[in-house]
Image: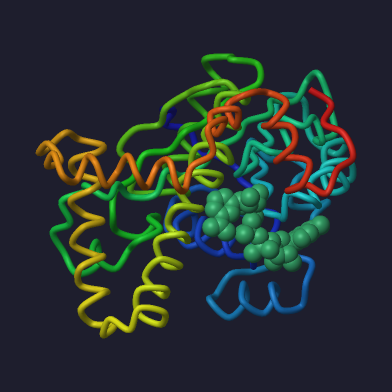
Length: 285
Ligand SMILES: NC(=O)c1ccc[n+]([C@@H]2O[C@H](COP(=O)([O-])OP(=O)(O)OC[C@H]3O[C@@H](n4cnc5c(N)ncnc54)[C@H](O)[C@@H]3O)[C@@H](O)[C@H]2O)c1
């Protein structure tokens, strides 16, 4: 990490991520400028005591530009802003999709970085009320971050890590990977698989309540406890599943999971899901 005072612009400061990262950056001693183009986003920014700056002024001499805008807008917005940046400026996006699909306006003298929060671990030992309530991270519960830097330049990586640790604080580790590896983490690992399974768990709960007729408190209590045990056993090996449970798990796998499900870890499938997410005809790798 570097000790220098940074100039940081947050573009999309009034959005969901823009508000979260700005709340943390505002508490730092760095020079932070807030850019937002929608009236509701502008109101959200001003209502919490932050001053808005127009994009051209905000990005002119900054060290880091955080693009906290929707992924589908990153191509057009980077085309407008990146030509105005000083050489060596770090353009930091918050999701790998646009960087992986080469949607960002390209300049060889600009550093492109991506940093995605991991969110606090399900196994985090939460000690305070604030940590308990901070499910997404960035407020009180410590989390890791996974990041990628196009050039791999060590000095720029240290500078980017300073901004990343501030905006997602409290941060334990920043894991540096490639943009492609980050794209396999999100969307493939955590959205295609983990978030989908979270949603499926709720579908199964609703079926148990509404189709079978189990009282909701009983079904919910059984599900929540078993989610905890399934994750502790499945991901951490805390205890073995019982023999009968293993038979039921095999039945569930055969009934619910398609045989070729691991094809989601192929590049063509990654491109397919990213095309849907970014509303694109092609992915230019
Ligand atoms: N929402 C999440 O939980 C989450 C988590 C991790 C990463 N991300 C990533 O963060 C980024 C932002 O997502 P979000 O969910 O915060 O989006 P959002 O839609 O909540 O906010 C985007 C903000 O950007 C503003 N904006 C759009 N174009 C602009 C422009 N040209 N100039 C200034 N402001 C502009 C919008 O008015 C809006 O306030 C995306 O890359 C997303 O993938 C989101």
